[in-house]
Amino acid sequence: MALNLNLAGFSREYLIGIPELDEQHENFFTMLDRIAEVAPDLYRPLAEEDVDALVDVVAELREYALLHFRTEEGYMKEAGYPGLGEQKKAHNRFITDVIRMEGDLLNGLTIPPIKVRNFMHDWYREHILTLDRQFGEFQKGNKA
Figure 1 (cartoon, rainbow, N blue to C red):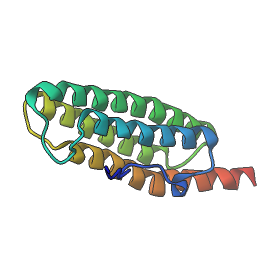
Figure 2 (figure 1 turned 90 degrees about the horizontal axis):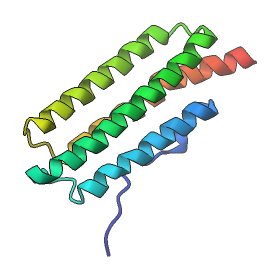
Figure 3 (figure 1 turned 90 degrees about the vertical axis):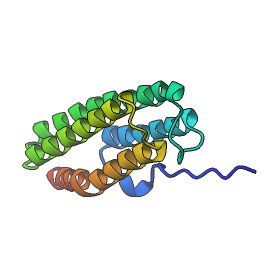
């Protein structure tokens, strides 16, 4: 019997109270599971011929993150959120780090898929629980 560890699962603790953003956050965590589909043993570096599949998944995650960040920043701009600048900086850092990781993979650096998955999972988790949650609270205050 195989043990299914959903290391990148979405949790209700990630809800910030803005339905579209909550749905996008959940979708991102679901997309992270695709890493395990292309790399069944997350702890072993991929064979050279399998790296492209991982790079493709990382590129899809990056593109989805860009879409999500644009949506999130749009909500923040519309609300006059004072933390928008900090959010943009965090978003840009994430995209820069993902692009660097893609480049490392394409240039033959052997990175275990779990490192890619954990980086994205941990970054998103921390970002949601800190900066995004602050925006959710700001929005609740505006609606009250």
